[in-house]
Length: 568
Ligand code: G6Q
Image (cartoon, rainbow, N blue to C red; front, side):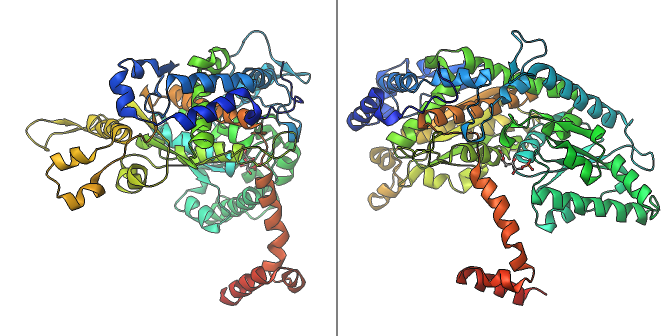
């Protein structure tokens, strides 16, 4: 049984790794031939997980590759580590914490109950969810009012990193489910432009701020929260809704600010009534927290019932990941494929290409999830990693990407594995009646691009095929497509709250699988912590402290000096 303190197994010393190395050396990927010779390939390598229909067959793998990757999973005890996570062992070793985002979406009454470190996790999760839901209902129904008795029309979530990327991505993805009379805006950057732009045009009487910060100590968030508080006071006074007394200001904060945090003492110090604060726990990592109270803005926007569906979607994939044999386990297989691409085929990046406009922030969200989790050079016991780790995740919605960077994916020198994501039923089934003789279903046209791109990437175009199009001989090579560019296609019936939860959980577990193979702690983020410290340390030098400036290295001194000269 794997426990938190079990040292990582060095994947590169396992028999399966050696076999994969030999297998790769002998393998000449040829998707054309593989599909031509094997009519069952597509069906055999397509899997369903909850509502997700996932075709892995256009990856550069044979049945033997998959079998070896499954053996690798066994050699590194993926199942043991997975079970340790679900059980609540402290697998976040460097912070000595359990990793229990999966507990956030366990249905109420799940059996057996989950007790971790003496905490009745289920009771706490559902207790807090009930508070969030009651609050969301109050805001949605208009029972929650601001200082003038008016209902809330705009919610502004102030948070950064994990306290921003999930909520904003999910809000954008689920816009069709949003209450019509409520909008949510998101402030994250400490660039004062962000708070200025996001409060522009808002009526202070109908604006509610949610300060979302796990630690309630993040410079960006607290600075933005103070700016927002000043804005509120100034704008309320401007419409004669606030007198200049301390009591009135405190009362205004009470009605226009709530918080989400694990640090209720700091919430109170800011002036927010802890009764209006929603909590979560140190076993929820920031980037794994959209399904906790950090999703309060989303719960307000889409309502508790839809939020429950969102959680149920996560849980469906959790159950798939927890109980399905590795050979059919979609997150496990996709994580192992990523290992294959990175460690055996030399890929440095991974594109995520949603053919769904509402998922336009999904790649940005995944960048944090994957790169903050697996961008590590040491293993969970502190020893150096023994192979390459986290690849760079990136992407943009199709078809926009097609007119931009797909060129490199099709014909560049680098291998860029890509996930294509689409839904069968669009939120807006528009028909173009003026394009030609027949009306055109625009979503079908859109998805024609999805299918065409993965096909072209897999099968390419040979020189003979180019010649057959009548291309002049000196242009043939420029128009050849090598093919054998690996893709995974992920289809879902529609972008519902549940499907969004499923997609997020899928990538959470893919990330976990890769982390286990590499032996790293996917749940700490010391690089982020460093950033939080550095800006504070250097701030005096930027704001006029000569001694602090003199203590900087010559390049930094000169840059700050130039900035100070220019700054009016
Ligand atoms: C996420 C990281 C990081 C964090 C932000 C905000 O996993 O820890 O992105 O979410 O730094 O932190 P707070 O929520 O504490 O303000």
